[in-house]
Amino acid sequence: MREAVIESLDHEGRGVTHLDGKTIFIEGALPGERVTFTSHKVKPNYELADADRVLKSSSQRVVPLCKHFGVCGGCSMQHLESGAQVAAKQRVLENALWHIGRAKPDVLYPPIVGPAWGYRYRARLTVRLVPSKGGVLIGFHERRSSYVAPMESCAILPPHVSDMVPRLRELVAGLSVPDRLPQIEIAVGEGITVLVFRHIVPLSKADTARLKAFAEAEQVQVWLQPSGPDSAHRLHPAEAPGLAYTLPEFGVSMAFRPTDFTQVNMWINRVLMRRSMQLLDPRPGERIADLFCGLGNFSLPIAALGAHVVGVEGSETLVRRAGENAAANGLAERCQFYAANLFEATEDSLAALGHLDKMLIDPPREGAIAVVKALGEQAPKRIVYVSCNPATLARDTAVLIKEKGYRLKGAGIANMFPQTSHVESIALFERD
Image (cartoon, rainbow, N blue to C red; front, side, top):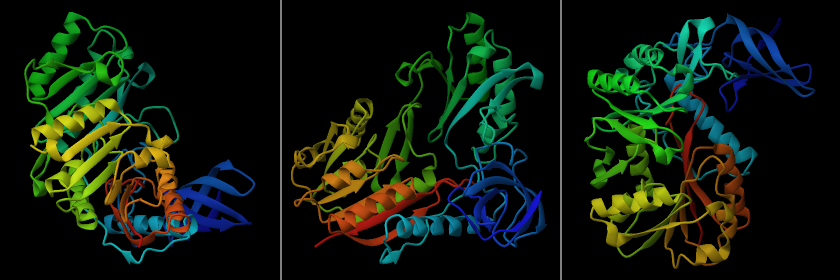
């Protein structure tokens, strides 16, 4: 066991120190603290370690709310005060932009923050039958492990879902194939909760009867998924309203299936939408691209503000859903949606979209390197880039600035995932 003083936090919420010419990343340690630690991975230039004892505590250290913290891999920052979490994430973004992109924004936007607990409206819980640990386990994976943390509750899930976890375990344990049901997907809309049970083998009549009774007792919808996401279908009740979330500021409602990708934090999504539209400033008569548009989360507000939107997404299923949402909200005339692989974007494929006054990019963690490299002379003067990975945002920023002539006008974070090290960012680029 060795001792160290923690200098900073890294992008995964680990304490960072330097000893004997090595960088050491210590889980469970905070800046300013003196800790003892044990390394579990030793490399020539760095080590990964766990804090054993905190000899001198940070003033920002708090008692984790969840009793599973430290075992469950779902959260990594519950021991850090919420405001300090936000500040740490802002530094992660700034450091990535500078060290990777060699860029500093003209303006740092105030962080977008919201509820610290009960915010996660989407989750995928792993199910395992482990007789040596008492039977069925339901929860997230343990840290650095494929094992399932034996979860009794979860403070980042909505309270009614968290309270349901022990009863879910009892339900699965009573099925005929508890070892053949690997996951339960949770999707919460406005006033509706859906549980999707992934099952590898067919369920018996007794199993479906138990699931229907559970749906009645818990006032939830139970869906079954025998294979891929598109196979998911409602079991009970037979007739029920679909999932949806609203963006009241723009007067739109977004319908989605429980296996569709949507933002996990609906409150933050609304505020992020407001800031995105303020920066993009869609106006009647403008033609604006929404790349990686999904089911239309950004597209519909753009159209609601009067602009014509061209949405592009790799999934044909989501493209179809986006078109349905546009029609349901009376915005179909101002929306066009196309399915295309944006990871293979070229200057010609972007030019085929026609004249664009502005662009919004909201890629997955891999970023949008092909898109930014494909921007030509006729590229829009303004780009709003929403990112879930500061590193790929910074990489793409370097291309936009050095190769494409844009200026980084502003950047900031949205704390979409409190208690975790994950961070959502937004950046504004403009060129003459």
